[in-house]
Image (cartoon, rainbow, N blue to C red; front, top):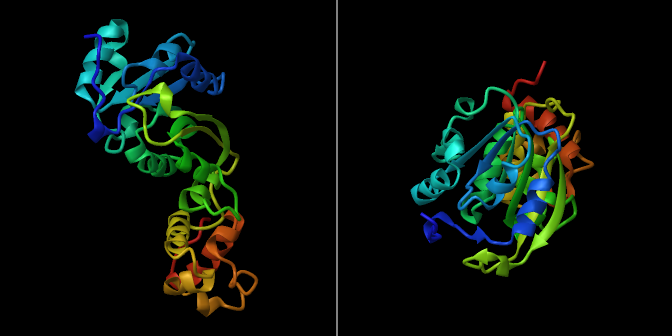
Length: 264
């Protein structure tokens, strides 16, 4: 097999510019030893990764045609090629230790991939990936930006995020209708937040669910107004004006009202 047909239902846009592929792979930390590539497709990133001295490298692919292609192209790598869905697979079945993630991610599930990274934040050391440019910019955006949102806050709580470069439409088959952006997420030194992390996620999602409202109104359902005095300095702010520390502070205060246990 020497050809894989891109499938619209899987959001496949195969990168065909090897210089960009190399640039993405070279953005990985040089000490990476455990790496998972999501959606390798025809192996344009895989090819360069295999040339690096990475101790434990695996790929996961949901497209059977791509799996057959990769098995044919890399017969010595067959045992590391996983046929499955990253969103559904138990990552403990792939790695026993911490690992990094790389990929030209399908646009239609890229946010879901990042939510799973957040869920696995204690094990995922680094992510280097290509996303729809708008999504990449949103993840890297800081407070005050119109694109700053739920994933910006959740991921920036645990990762240093760099927007690396923009990729134009004409280097893909088929060309997408939008530009792409490559970003790198590098785990910071935060072991855990000084609040209940599950409730932190609820607070952030609830706040941005009504992002045009001031925070005292968008978090009304979680009891913000019962702590108006404690949170007076934040009550007229909108969600996009608040940084990670602000959301941690709000989570700590609202935990009292919602019977949420704090970390020891």
